[in-house]
Amino acid sequence: MSQSLYVQLIFLFYQTTVVRTKKFNKIFEFLIVGLIEPVLNAVSLHQIKKNSKLSLRNYFLREFGNERSEQYLTAIRNFVQSCAAYSLICYLLQLKDRLV
Image 1 (cartoon, one colour):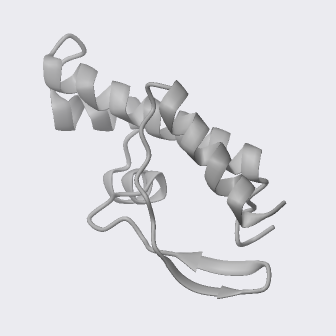
Image 2 (image 1 turned 180 degrees about the horizontal axis):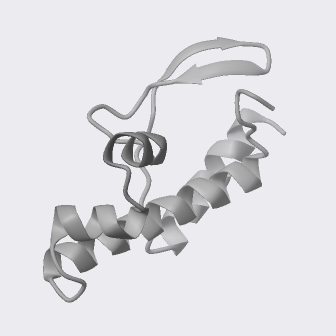
């Protein structure tokens, strides 16, 4: 699939969904292998589970308050939308994890 088709798919996805993505800069690219810019100050699911010894739900409760608070609901909505965007883009573009 050509790079222009990738860009068109992402643009179409961005325009037709409530999910928002951030444009990443390519740091390195060689044939079909590349590296994209990391998200700074982000905490991975692995780090949350390893460092806090909490489930994701309990981590969100500790960090953002009770399940009915605006801060908690916003955090959950942001998490779900970012997972959806990541999953759909990886599926559509057939992006693979570095370990695959």
